[in-house]
Image (cartoon, rainbow, N blue to C red; front, side):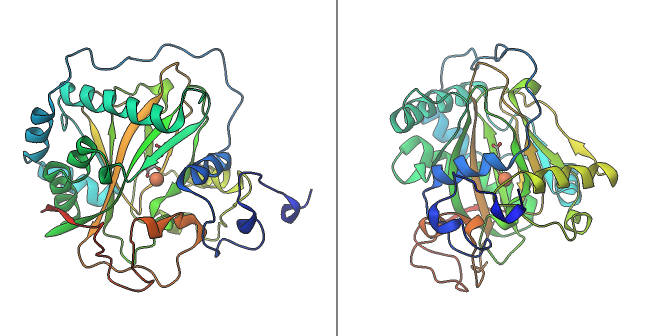
Length: 326
Ligand SMILES: O=C(O)CCC(=O)C(=O)O
Ligand SMILES: [Fe+2]
């Protein structure tokens, strides 16, 4: 079948014809249901294995969560260097196990309320939880997390773009290779996502994996995004392989949090465990950044995160408070 004849039934009708320039015509969950179809998945080998479970500790109280998330984290100079060179860094001990446990328990409630239990093999998302959930607001607006983001970017202040819960359910396949610059309609490369797992994430569960470097768009020069199939994902992987690009694909310990810049190319393996692979992902951008002139469908439901903000305007709506200071 010719490339142009291929269809992807997860694409909303309005996004099927033409290129990627049209605005996304579905909701955030529909976006993820489509997006994971763009990842190539080798034949799965063997049955699902046990996951690591949730941290085996009593959950922190909400007051303890609040106090911890207000406490600055000491970012080592070597970590800042690593982030600026590699475009990502994984930081140990950002969240104590009892806090992780409390967040995992609450996230379970929120996901069950929204998506029910018939979720095997899917990639479930929730976004903008901070607008209606007190605990999730503590995370999204955390001076600790926002402070790390500002320090890594070398900015005086960062604003929140959005929060997310990302649940890769048992049996769900890979996340396609991508960098987030194409997802955020921001005219700035000073954008970073804190990816906060709510359990340990061993290799079979599909930890987020990162290609090292801030200049990788050069390595991928000429590759075209494929909105119906896996050709882009496959080609990125081949180019990285043939160019000797280093990829870090390591497990996460409980409390470890990664920060990836919008220039960082990343992917994640399938979840071959019986436990959902869950993380909270909050994105921050430099105070003063503008919205691009022409957001595309890859930017998804961006007006939800930047209400009353026109393309080209400074991104500082009522939903983008300054969260962290460097
Ligand atoms: O959770 C995943 O597999 C993908 C997450 C991601 O791409 C991101 O947080 O930028
Ligand atoms: Fe991403």
